[in-house]
Length: 432
Image (cartoon, rainbow, N blue to C red):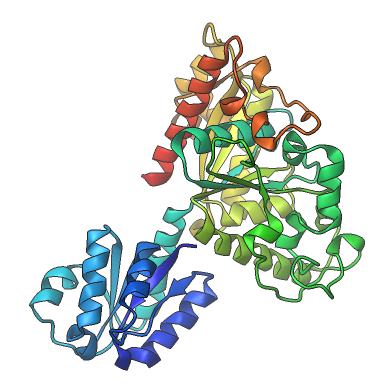
């Protein structure tokens, strides 16, 4: 689990607790160890596992050998430093050289803590971005992209990736598992509904939120441990790495019929906080979404850093992308608004269609209602029988459903290269 490490002196405990509570309110995991000189090994390991380090700058910490060792360890690891000054400490030579250049916030600023937490949260999101695969038109290949592109990402670029099936039709889940396995998972609440409501995954005495379409549980809950909720797609015999799935289920359709706005707001907050917490365990989180503008759409858009919209090279897919861009810009607040990237899917491998060529030249920017030509990925996904969604064979491991790992066959090499090229382009965009 990744976290922000807080370096402090033993006399900074009150400021440490205040900071801890502020980070916890934003679902940012933090870690700190007693700075008494006797926990060096634990501190070093915690720093190695961190995505950033906050340094509480005080008269005491400036003189602390442990804080100095924390900073030296962080610098050696290339860790982001976020200092926060809590008193009128005078910097010594080491702090002037290593810490002061990064110092922008202090407790004397009216919004110092708020800005500190905001920068930490931005670093946390960069460590594990969230992407929503979405188009408000069906049949454009969202499930194919969600499984095959990000399966290729994990297989070729590495990293820990979590797929979340947010479509009530749960086709992504059925890509990897037979129907009876998917249904058994939903029946045990080992499924997406446990991101929204307290379920049997969280407590033995809880009732399943899937049992009633008339009530919403607004009772708070702690996110379930990874091993209780996620399906490990890279099981025995796989090439290794981590590609996990939170399976979908039909019962999340209940949220489209709910009329209690206050309860919906609470369960949306549960969802957002849970996803934010799972960022600490992954390097990328991906939603496969439904082709409608619903409560689930808003949930995905509010937590996503980028939307990837697959589209076919025709005017019907263009309408879906146009509507999606409108929803993003009219329904999502600017500070939560994700970037939008468009991927041409099912294109001819022999020649570029006139529609695709004109779209890339800006011809359809006006009809799209935004700069479609600039949002288009340079890479495209070819039409291929290898990419058709097929039901898994009985007793076949889930990872063999991925083209990147599916053995040999005619035409597989160029398809795999296309998948890798898309993954690399997306990774580059997310890191920019």
